Image (cartoon, rainbow, N blue to C red; front, side, top):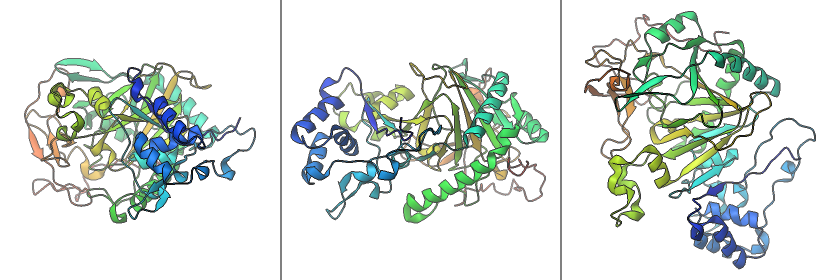
Length: 471
């Protein structure tokens, strides 16, 4: 079987909408353009956001005889007997679209496209080209040599026996995380800091461990690859080829890692944005997947006034009851994107991810067991804890708890602004206070503390060692 498996973006939809199904749309297009292959019709339909009218117009503007699409010759067949997954290819470069001047250009000529998500539907992405175009992420398949990936997986499967579920409080009820995890740092001193100074969700983490040999070994490869992907993103996607405001211009260097274990198809994590408190604004995170393939779902954070505009005249519209809408309801209302994460793949969450998107690992009905890990997926998220965001600098609220750094996402008037908030109400057994303070950063994302804090000029604050540098 070919190692290069072509998987195309796929739209899934509720079974109770047969009149709007992808099959019906394809049947309509096939009746109009019988000379075009059905696979090609599907690609063009996806590129047109599922609009039959737009797809028909696009096909009519071209010579249908020339719309038959095939992959590049070099990717038709891989070397026989290869054990690698192979790169999943995209057909986007073969699909033509209309440019501003009216000429036809390849779809990939656009640096980034608005995700064609629709209410109640999920767009499934597989290829690196489509993931980079539709989301604030890039993916590298077959990231490590096969033997290194297996060695790291085996090492972390042993480590996962010591993982635990963290607790947090929601509406005065203590709940546990739906998967197990542990935090990894480089040195014994850093381990002490993590259990006595750094907090997560308002609590100190008891389960902190020292980086394992394989975790250290691959960190240099992770650091190099993530920095390369950051520069590509700035060059190819960001306006004028410049970094985002508040994004650090310094080299990204991993000095902490969260390792998660999803044991079976029902273990998951709901829609969320990762904490910014020690990472600073517009952070980049490198996420390595090992073992069972799972879906990584993402959705944009849309202010309430921009949601469900097509239902504004409907008194029963979800937009009329936004305050009561849950995260899953919002995902259904605007549609979501599913990125498939196979074994040994590195996903880079770029600088706009945490402020503008939410992500989740949703429960699965079935999974394909991995020959080494069985039903388990191991996920390593490498993070850069910036020195200037050490907990000895960050504000404390009136109840004495470390504040959390958050970005305003849902209110139009303050969207994109950062704030320090009391997070004690999420700590089991605590009520919290109403402490609130706007956060101020320079263009490079460094905090402007004011005269009451001296920064780290005196060198008194211990720094977290880079995993690579501590080998």
